Image (tube, rainbow, N blue to C red; front, side, top):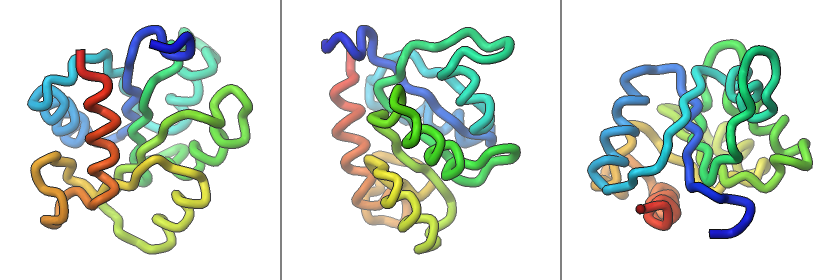
Length: 147
């Protein structure tokens, strides 16, 4: 383990509880047993990462799984802030969305995402209308987190 990531962890930024449960289930099915920190929107995630307000600062996550469509601060807005912050510019971020809008995909690529996943997330469904090929890179990165 490098000094940057003493303990592998995942920050899941998602406002839909069903999607949170789906991600947790998929991680368990893949025997990926790392701490999963959940934020309900981009603003809450930023507070956790920076330790602002009443939020204690969380350890730098190995992977951020980020929904695009959320209230208060959406995923792309959060990603823009993270990419402009020297502390978080290199975070490994995967965008998850139900939207397959080309504009969302292009914006995510401009912001140097590690992968773009169309929900529902399932590691079984590469190319079957679930996860796209980009999801395969997520799967490989997550495998590195297996304990």
